[in-house]
Length: 150
Image 1 (cartoon, rainbow, N blue to C red):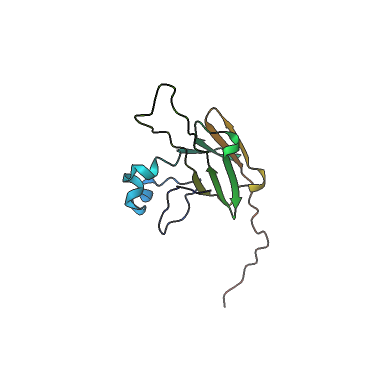
Image 2: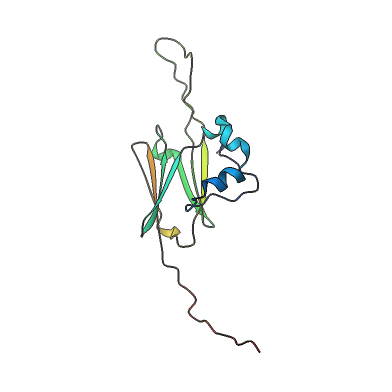
């Protein structure tokens, strides 16, 4: 699957808990914010957090459930889609302008340490892909031994 995702030079994957938009703006490549040709191919994502889970919603109208590929490798959640190009002609002639984009895309997110990757759920309804990532308790090391300094 060919992807047309934004590529950041020298920066890490965005995290589900990213909140520093100014830091992102000043540390990202300049064309990420001003080259609309690239940014228009990647769907918008909303990330929210509750006490029990993280919720990731991606706006993807016109897709089918079978168009998506969601996978997690080494705490990196990657969501991608590829829709086959439709070559339908209009009944009354040809297109004068065509803006629908049937290309592929991919987005990746670094998951926090407290995510339970074995219980991730995804559902697609009404043009929105919803992914629920449950949280888990992080067990702290209880075998702490204090060492005196002489």
